[in-house]
Image (tube, rainbow, N blue to C red; front, side, top):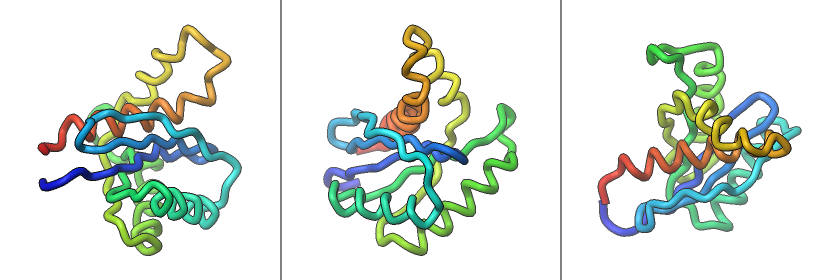
Length: 137
């Protein structure tokens, strides 16, 4: 892989979507907030705006699988959203195994229960960090 690739990661949920940004040069993922109360079309519009504003090269979306690596109902919903997003954006959109990221985010935030809504952002950050760690530069 040549050059630095800027990435946007999403922890997709039915009510909230966590966001994180990072790049392959620094290999550091940073939480970028949570989007909530959205339709899929509004969410896609917001993602496109972030892609343009932040000059994103790739969108990474956490793929929820069960502990055995099998698809769940949420896996199908995420895959449908990924296809829709691919049809509306010019940058590559790929999924990345997110098993246990919500549990990890929950543990990291346990000391501060008022930050429960940040779980989605932290989960996106963990997904992206795992992705960046797996990509060869």
